[in-house]
Amino acid sequence: MPKPQSGRRLSDIPAATMAAAAAEVAAAGGGGEMVVVRLPPLSEDDPLFQDKKRILDSRNLSCLFQVPNSCSAADAFKVLDRMIQAARIAHMDELELYFTGDEDFGPLSTRNELESLNLLLKILNTLLLTANVGAMGVLQVLCDEILLRLRSLELEDNGQMVVQIRNQNMEDSLLKWGEQHGAGRGMVASENIDVGDIALEIPESSIISEELLCQSDMFLALKDLDSITTETMLLLWSIRERYSPSSKFKIYFEALPANFNTGLSFGIDALAALEGTLLFDDGKLTTCLIPIAGLLNHSVSPHIINYGRVDKATKSLKFPLSRPCKAGEQCFLSYGKHPGSHLITFYGFLPRDNPYDVIPLDLDTSVDEEDSSSPSVTTSQTSHMVRGTWLSRLRGPPTYGLPHRLVSHLHAILGCNQNESAPEADNKENDRMVLETLLSIFTPMLEGLGEPDDFDRENACWDVKLALDYKDLQRRIVLSIVTSCTSGLAMLDS
Image (cartoon, rainbow, N blue to C red; front, side, top):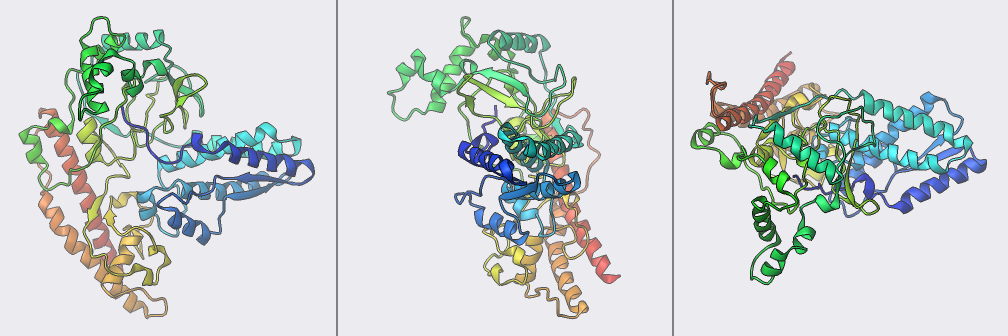
């Protein structure tokens, strides 16, 4: 089961922040004409704090918004759009910050959009609890619009899961075991589930964790051994429980596959197929197994993004929906913000159009980018990267579908910064230098990956097939960069 992701969750919003905003609404509605909506302030502990603050300031955004009680729906939606922009910026991760240009107002990614809309929905629903009649109308309009946007997101399953031998009877037994131990719905929705509904609920007593280990006799026998870690003890405990006929978790362990087809078990042929690619990562072990929840598949467009904390009131781990799931649809979870290399290595599948599939670049970063004419390169980031240009919404000049920060950096190190007062021909020549430099980097890389072959994948072993899929992904990314550079040069010539 994937570990919970770090970062600010909806449940992390301080109650005081919610209460303060609610109080402002009540006060304003008492005799005023404004609804005050306050987003959680940026945390100065966030490594990206300065970058996010700079973007907020450049767009004249803050964490405080006012909506007139009597305004039209169109005017309310204009304020809502600015709230969403601010929430998107607050939820930015390092990659989104890197690949977002100054003129890109979003959506930035599926996950970012789901986090932003759900944050605002939670805040507005909290305000509704204490709002008077004057404020209720506009708050309800805003809530309904957010729900409409969440329900209208056109998302599709983009997780290519490796086909593994499944035992349907064992999975059915596991689900029955979960029901007997208090677990709720799971996997494929048996009914329509809306935003905020609980798709799955696992009792704390059914979670295999360090706390459960500490209650066992094995912990008493092992805890005083030198250099033994909690992970090792939990592994030994799990091995014993798997083969114990009286184990409470017997059905769960029996439902696990006999073999795990992941990158860690690639054969020689599969490793050979990866030649020329960048398959690497630094995965970490976790110390928590959650029966039934482990059957949820991953997607870059998940239904569930906020989970990982046990509800103290119900003593259960809840999995609320961040977007609707219709009856009969598979319900997807997010395993985290991982590139395909990580998902292949530790989970054995490769998603399509994953925004976290990037190729890092080893470029000279000794140039002081803060001296660049473009304010967008003033950032705490010093590393550079590319990803498939099909994810970019801006295909023409000045970036040609390439990361704005990368293009600005190359302008700086090549000594050809863009200047609005310079002749157009000079700026075009500067663009040409940048595009030709990128072609000199990526053309040999594309040649090193070779041409797609006519290998019989249908009859290939699972690991060779997965390795070739990953190589195709790398080739597709590099080819998109080469194509964007070539198209950009053609634009300059025309």
